[in-house]
Amino acid sequence: MPGTRHSVGMAVLGQIARRLGVAESWARDSRCAADLALAPLGDAQLVLLRPRRLMNVNGRSVAQAAELFGLTAEEIYLVHDELDKPLGKLALKLGGSARGHNGVRSCISCLNSSAMPRLRVGIGRPTHPSMVQAHVLGCFSPEEQELLSPLLDQATDLLLDHIRARSQEPPLGL
Image (cartoon, rainbow, N blue to C red; front, top):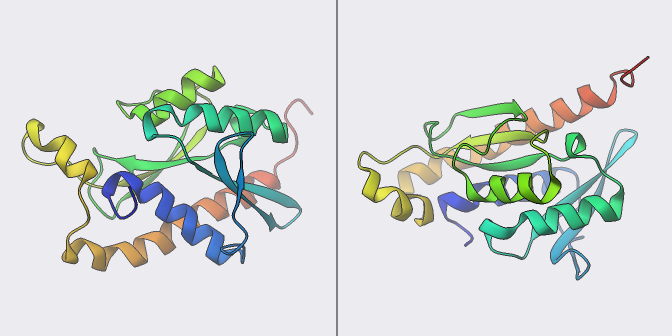
């Protein structure tokens, strides 16, 4: 659902597409049930993916796109909301568990790997556990939306800088 805390990863992806000049290049791809945009970044080409499946089963789209483009789990970045980080906080995590995020769990299951780097975008946790679902699926308040624009820029910078740095590393095993 666009505009919700749960879709903040898609908002970051949209900002990346705008930054790389491919925001108008999204094309539906039925082979992976997703919208795709290809974006040059230095010597690399990024495959930006917006799954059209529900969050809890989006791993199928990610795995199908990985097969189409010959990507390993280590080359796939997941960008997702994170309850355990306050709004405005970002963390880059290199692999690991899903930490309760069903979309990440789906990706881990469908790729048979937990090695994907992840950009975790803080959305904050509500004070009472019974409020989690409404919080995650709810829209950002006007006050939170003021933080969102600079947060999307910061997330884009962090992710693109990390991808650039990784693309300059020598191949493993040399």
